[in-house]
Length: 160
Image (cartoon, rainbow, N blue to C red; front, side, top):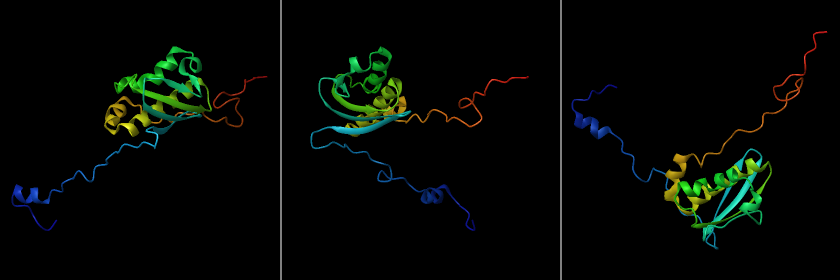
């Protein structure tokens, strides 16, 4: 800092500008069939999701979403990214999901749909990011420790 600034013009000349080239740009990623692919994860469940323009039909493991996810809460959870992006009924969703239970699988499908939507329409990224749909929920089951009955529960204590 041997030099001292004499005016604001000199300070403005030193200012580095961030150009549009430095900012990340997201492009549309579709395969030869016009589908966007993404992988969603939640707990132990992993979902592979393909979306394409259509009538809004959702298929999970070759079954209708109403038969695979019987609970309305799980179906609502899957629809959340499409509703948030105002694209409900505009895309057909085909997904295969494995591992975990139904709740984890629904979360994995939701995460996969969100990522596939951003691959198909990159301008939806800000809406989905703001809703928290693109963030992978990192909470998993805590491991069992030795000397304990479960992860934290101790064995029953006997005084005598």
